[in-house]
Image (tube, rainbow, N blue to C red; front, side, top):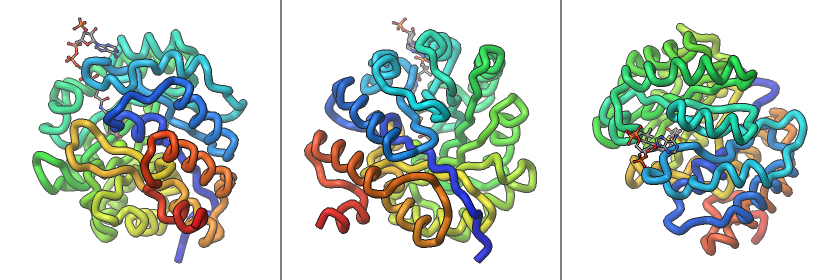
Length: 298
Ligand code: HMG
Ligand code: MG
């Protein structure tokens, strides 16, 4: 197998995981989670969203979270910013990275951010420019890259178009989201081949939800195609309020166990990662979605 020597793990539980929790999660708990993830050695920890609290009330206190976490030098703590209002709030909170989020499906774009794909890209252009002028790097998400909860299968050209536009607008990395987790390894590889024909594969991240139990297989498939950035969520938390039925992201513990087994470097400590997952699972009062965490804790 031709695999990358090193993978950057992007932890998304504090945002993608907790945005989907039915009950509000206290700021202190979010801070406890993020600080434990930092201690585990993760290089990137997506920590919240500056979105409308009417749309996603779970992320309403992101400014307080950003204020209270202990930031480790060299670690990035990105937040989602759907528009200029979100970006201004993020800059005021002193963030060092933001993410804009588009979709490869028109229906999902409307449900998630209340505008068409074209309108969203128009809206992101000044957000990206302003962020970069402030010295803040910008990640771009494309959702529904392998399927849409409203439109079904999505063809790679739709993804390539949006990914290429986000890159041309100044995003340094493009995270490809299998939002509903319907992808399978062959389709995931075909997607990467299509996007990598337009953008350097080093720019691409895999953001796979595990709804159909395919995420690890899909990750191994895209690692073989040169993808070396993986989004995951400790304890397998996650989902999107606008993609009903979408299960959590692939569990970080399971991803790390697989990468360790393949001899791929990450700089992340599995025991500490399992501790972070145990902390949030116990606090939320539900079993971990990570098989590795369950196996290791007996
Ligand atoms: P809208 O209603 O069209 O916005 O929503 P608007 O500009 O008309 O504003 C309406 C109200 O929202 C106003 O307040 C604004 O001030 C307020 P009012 O005057 O009614 O009191 N508002 C804001 N408040 C705080 N922060 C802001 C903000 N913007 C407006 N930034 C909008 C458009 C984009 C705001 C809304 O649709 C929204 O917030 N959507 C976010 C949805 C979301 O967070 N989804 C989950 C994240 S995406 C995801 O999970 C997928 C991903 O994981 C990848 C994958 O898995 O595929 C990334
Ligand atoms: Mg997601």
